[in-house]
Length: 416
Image (cartoon, rainbow, N blue to C red; front, side, top):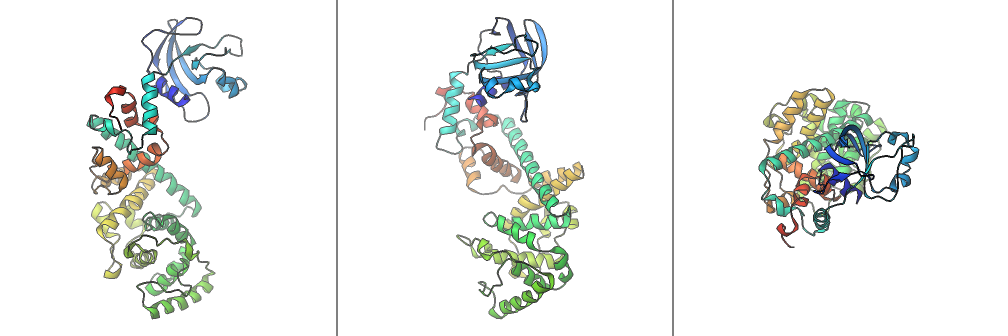
């Protein structure tokens, strides 16, 4: 309920009648302030006129005034200087340390807002706000998708920087692990990251000119050279790789991951983990995929060529390359651009997203069915971010589409 009260305050959905404090002084909200997502008062930098006098400062909001004491704000000096307390149930009085009363106003949550919000979070359809999509201004949709895509890139940037910190700040190793994770194509992403972290790149680098040894280390560290052959691999080759890995494991004191980590369920043969590992081994051996090559790739075609290998048996499809660009290469370029404070790199990454076709998955198809067709990969990434961070946790009050839904009158909306 408090989140809805925050929403009402943020968007100034106030009753037509004059707002007044608990002691009858007129209140005019000039600016509700900025929602504070950290500790402290709920809204920062608000501008409020109380009895004709302009106050600038912070605002705290509770469903009941007594929640002030339940949250122990009376013991926290951060709240000593708020300019206004907003509540929907005035059941207590508040005072500053000086003894002067803290101004309070009562705001009732409009019935329409409650009904639309309840309906939105309880609908058994996706997206639940589908009724408003067709009538929304294209500019509103575009601006929200752009913000969501940037939000997703910033989230990926944090993940990549955390990964780099675990890898001794090495960008080359970070790039390899980032790309390797994407070779899991969803179902095996976690396993690929664990596998990539198990490979001592300084050791395998000493054998980079020998594809057979690279393959031995890659398959061995995946726990796949335990005596159980791999589909599609010649039996003699498998035994030779087992023997080679036995030697290299002793030489570098290697510890493989558990084979049971890999998921083969409902995967097409071209997506089998050992097939993807074979592709990565060839890319590593060929040297086409490197930190420098990735950062210097100026076009989508340049990025696609990073994943080219001579062997037809290990070539990647165009669709697979696009997925790797979307989920690994371009987020990595954006992250490095952020680290270097290089706007050119960040813009290059975001612009390349707009040159790649939108993804085709269940989430994207649901939005297409609702009347919102993504134009490119930037849009489809935005819709995935929307699903993960807003739709799934029912955080509709922070969503611009949700706002459009909540702001409509109940009789406008379609019945399920």
